[in-house]
Length: 69
Image (cartoon, rainbow, N blue to C red; front, top):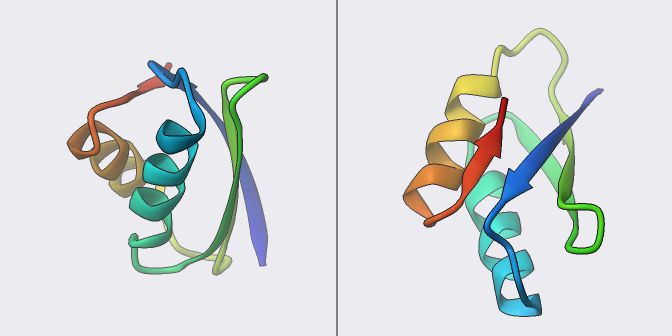
């Protein structure tokens, strides 16, 4: 397993955390996403060897939030 930490913009409540977590965990290859509203980050555990950053960015965007680059 590999880990990736991404910054998420636009989260303001626990509902946002849940929505972002569900969006990221729907990406193929993602095992788990831990979202921190306070830090504005998502720590993603995924199958090593998969290039999932673009898919995560797209899933977060579709959920109504942005991945900070």
